[in-house]
Every structure is written in structure tokens, then in C-alpha cells.
Image 1: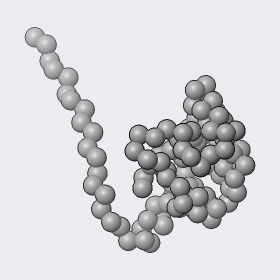
Image 2: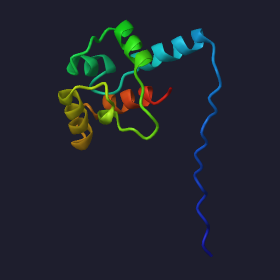
Image 3: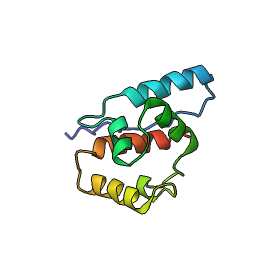
Length: 109
């Protein structure tokens, strides 16, 4: 007798408006989260961007990814920044976790 494997369902959460203070706290926690060898602040520095918490918050508030858009294909990167992001993911480089975290943050608009 074969036992069927349980289905894994992914349920998308509704976009429920949240109080700005809650959003601010969530963003603060995500920015400060350790992403492995390199933190988000270090990735911003590597990309030549201001990397203090305030600058990261401003960047995340002003930029976003369109649904299905790859991080490196976003129009706000220079050619060198886009290439770095592509290589970090393609080579599963030590930056890959931080790059994935940035893509996730930019996709939450």
C-alpha cells in the first residue's frame, strides 16, 4: 500500500494595511537581521551605497521590484551593480544570502 505524500501548500498572505509604526519596526528588524557572513549593511557598502540603517530604510522606501522582476534587472542599478548581483547569485557566492534578503525586502511593496 502506498501512502500519499501530504501536499505542501503555499498560502499568500493578504496585503493588510498596517500601522506605520508596525511597518517601521518590522523594517528595522529585517535590516538588522544577520544574513550569514555578510549583513545587509555590508552588501550596501559593496554596492557603493550608503550603508547606515537610515540610508537603507530610505533606499527600501524609494525602490521596489515589479512582480517577477529579478533583482539585477531593476532599473535603479548601474551596470556594475547589476553584474555584481548576478554573479553573487549565479556563483552562489558568499554574498548570495544578503542579495536574496535584499530582493525579498524590495519585493514586499
